[in-house]
Image 1 (cartoon, helix red, strand yellow):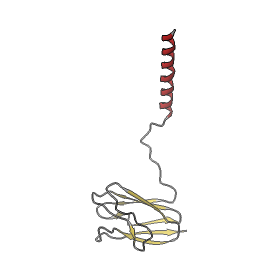
Image 2 (cartoon, rainbow, N blue to C red):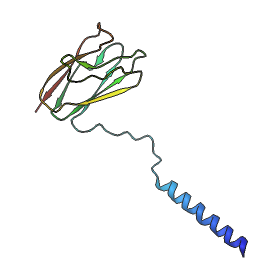
Image 3 (cartoon, one colour):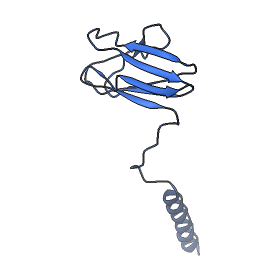
Image 4 (cartoon, one colour):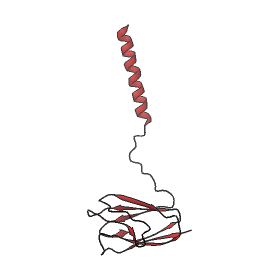
Length: 120
């Protein structure tokens, strides 16, 4: 009788673990789309790509450093500053107001500036 209770307990626990693990999403191939009104900029080959992006007010831009060297995305008027971005690091900034925002890399002055154009 004691062995039967132990076996039944093990079966119940095993079943619960199996059901729980099957209910978890195991699909790691899905990607989360960027939020509406947002866009991405890659920093690669010592350049911002694309170098000009257009978004709506309230939208965001995410910069990703694809170079082996660190970079920054720093607004010329001090509105935003990513700080040093290591390889594969990202920085996101949400633009609440309309305007044109020119930015550069503080570390590499030879890089062409980037522009974010924010409209209504």
